[in-house]
Length: 123
Image (tube, rainbow, N blue to C red):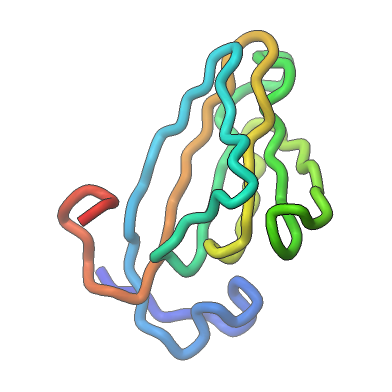
């Protein structure tokens, strides 16, 4: 079902727009897993939310990293506990640091301003 943006949500990204869920994804990383592309973003979406599903101590490493500006910009490491979420403009570059030990699990939801998506993320 189509949503309507509340004032101030995502720094106004959704304000005045009709939006829908583009995709809901489960991301699991084991030791050695990461997203370390300095240009990685969620192109095509407006707003992304990543919710940590792992308990503290289930993994070493695997921190969420917000990258300011271009891929060479300031990196802000976000330490998340189980149930914590980070919500950000989908065009913001972001990474997940390499998991050194254990496993990292998260739920990612992306919103966009197109119709309801009944296919996978790439259609």
